[in-house]
Every structure is written in structure tokens, then in C-alpha cells.
Amino acid sequence: MSIIDPKIDVLLDATDNDRFLLCSLASKRAHDINDMMRGQRDRAIQLSSAVEIAKANSKKPLSMAFAEIARGEVSYDPETIDISQH
Image 1: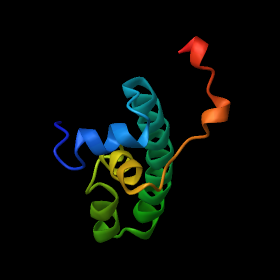
Image 2: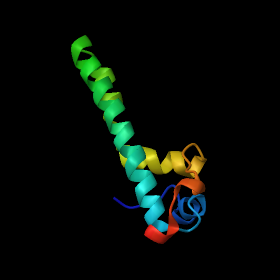
Image 3: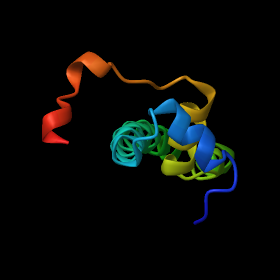
Image 4: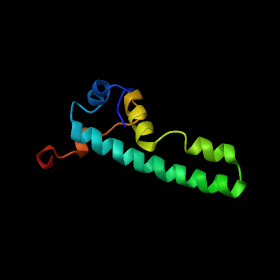
């Protein structure tokens, strides 16, 4: 996987140029997305709808998380981060 879109500069700007924070934020969001997708997949299997299963598997959770971060839909509260533990 390569990060072509969104650009890495845009992603780093969203996390104050902290690549470790970017990784943490993206991985937590991807985990949430994966949990949601798993629920949709289970529901699609119950409905036996191949179209819904294909939609659920069309994009990787980490790619979706990076796109959400770039659009500003996912953020963090700087007050909750202890920079000395970083």
C-alpha cells in the first residue's frame, strides 16, 4: 500500500506534523471502521446480498481512515495527549 491520495503532507498537517500521532489516530479509526464493516458483512450474509458484501469489501479500513483524517472528519483533543509520554 502506498499513500498517494490523500497526500502525506495533508495528513501530517492534520496531526501537527506528528507521524506517531497520525499512526495512532489512523489505526484507532481503522479499527472502528473494521468493526462497523464486520457488522455490515454479517448483515449482508444474512440477507444473502452479494452487492452489499462487495460494497463492504471495496475499500480498506486504513485507507478510509486516512481519507477521513484528510477531510477533517477525524480529529483529536490536544489536551488529552501527554507529550512527555510521547
